[in-house]
Image 1 (spheres, rainbow, N blue to C red):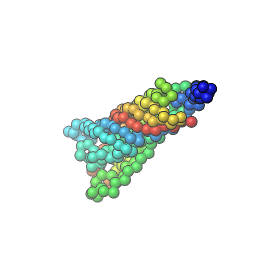
Image 2 (image 1 turned 45 degrees about the vertical axis):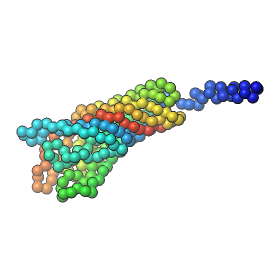
Image 3 (image 1 turned 180 degrees about the horizontal axis):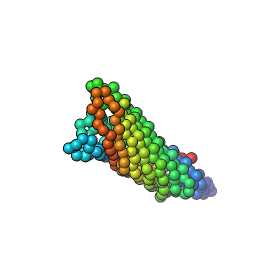
Image 4 (image 1 turned 90 degrees about the horizontal axis):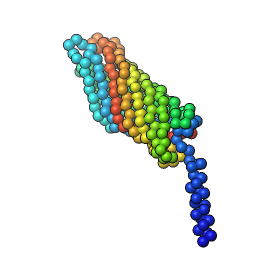
Length: 235
């Protein structure tokens, strides 16, 4: 009987003291490092301004499941030989610091490059595409328990993309992330939830090519809506 009581008392002490050893995500002073959009299901849209008289503005959209960056997809609008790649679909590394309980300030950085050795024709399309992205943001972590929480984030994203030596793009978007935080272990969490990148401005500029025929500079914007999966750790 005394043995059973001792075991029961010891168990209660361990259970009662476990919160002291577990650190709830979003505590003031926490520094989180995340890998986001490693895997995503998304709907992307590109809107491009007409660059020739008599041709209306055009839009195109596609749905994708990506692990990493899916890169260029198909031909550009208006029959341009340049393929399009949504810069918002690239995976990113995030840094967030909790300046107060639940309140975080931080941002994301991303760089990706894809090379295509099967260009098919001389001068057709780009042999490589690279993209850079930065997204300063603010967040608010609502933890329902030690394990599950919700961490909405919002900010502005700037991107710059280069398609070999043919053309370059730059622009910005309003970015909203709505990930659920699932923390199976202390200082480790999975991030799962929807996101929105709403393109607000963007332009495409062409490099002079031999023989001429390059389209004039014009506007091109992107939008991406999806569900992303990521991983976070914090100190």
